[in-house]
Image 1: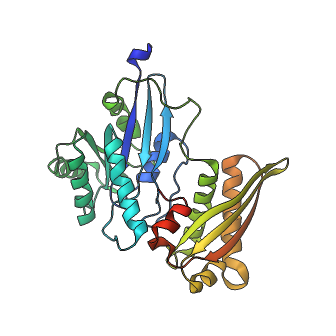
Image 2: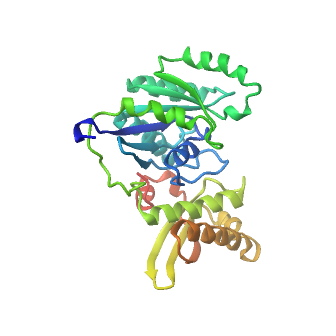
Image 3: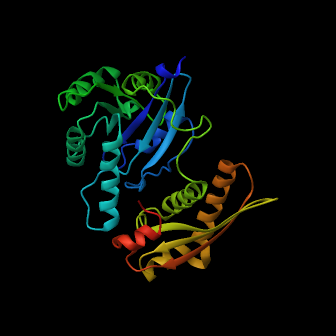
Length: 297
């Protein structure tokens, strides 16, 4: 294939929180790039996953869920990151749950319409539809909401119909040589991904108690002959939250830390020595300066 025939472009994966955007991007790339939890607003950053094929390079951009609660600076930044991804995209995968279309879905779709670029509607969790004939009116309902280039039902979790979705994408990519090296799978650094894995495990272990009031910052990352040494600070907004994260006798922090260490060992392929500290930074999620210092876009 000549360089002239090669295609390369950006695909923004957008929608309201907790519809499976990160699971979809991970499935498309074939590796875990974005962390995944059952909690809304798990994704806080714009994260790219790169799929390189013989005929094209597709850069999927996972985005924070577009949401109504914009009381804090972090929420406003998350919404802005999603909208900015639309501005840079060649194609949008507007992702929704197959059985639910909420006010936040409608608002997210309005942003897609305003962007004025081709969009494919992705109806996630099709594995929950029985019998399959029930999909037809759901596809028709979505088709009526916007002039989508296509409407594709999928199950991101089970991988159902992802090949069909992937076949549609290259046609919307412009002719261009690849923008990233063939071996590159994300634009995010290893330290960023380590911090995200730690935050993922904390979110899962803390359940409903403290899912959004914490952030993770890597203070030390050092490769050694025996593996990798990582020191990380877990920032919370109030003194009372510190005790929740640490747990009785340090139990919560130990459990989440062990889970993160095992996940990182699997991801990095080497043993990981992980040290965690919990510190308080008052109301960091509503301070643009603190957010910038903590690595938020």
